[in-house]
Amino acid sequence: MRIATYNIQHGRTPVGAVDVALLAAECAALHVDVLGLQEVDRGATRSDRADEAAEVAAVTGMACAFAEATSFEPGSAYGNALLVRGDVADVEVVALPGEEGDEPRALLLAEADLAGAGRMSVAVTHLSVRPRVALHQLEAVVEALAARPLPQLLMGDLNLRPEAAWPILETAGLTVVDAPPAFPVHRPDRVIDHVAGRGLAFGAVDVVHLKVSDHRALVVEVAPA
Image (cartoon, rainbow, N blue to C red; front, side, top):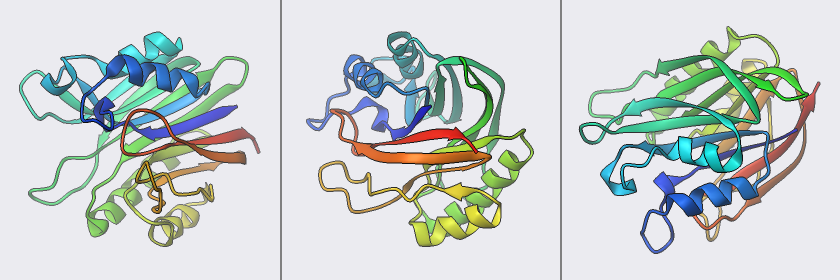
């Protein structure tokens, strides 16, 4: 099984334009079974009112779920998405703790029923840029995921370096992927995009430079433990 986490920066290209069709094509080119997306727009002016998760799902042939974290304008939503080559069930959106004035953050929890590979609990999230806040949010994320059935997979832009994120993840019993930097896109030097799991074995790891976003996609081979 092949999975990926990808902060899509709402489909923004290096020249500043948003290209949802290109975003969908680039996601399809990853050829993954589970895809966690962050910074996803739905109905926003800047992305031509597109439902970005639905458009990626249509091109990739995957089922999808969207979790709103906040809205920047009436009628729009912004958050995380999960796409699965199979079915998505038991979707839950968990508002994460924050401080006054912070951008609201959310966790998408769901059961992924993978064609030919069984069921798996999946969490997709994007945490605060403020490390103190992100640490509290990560604690809430691992607590929520722990209540779901095994095996469990966590993917996201945690905005935390390994030395900050790993102790929380490992204390919770999660195995963490030792990933290369995926940010910023042109000369990655920061590991803030993470994959971790329980009841899973991780194999080959890669970061893929796509034509959309200021992040690269983090791609990992996964098998049952």
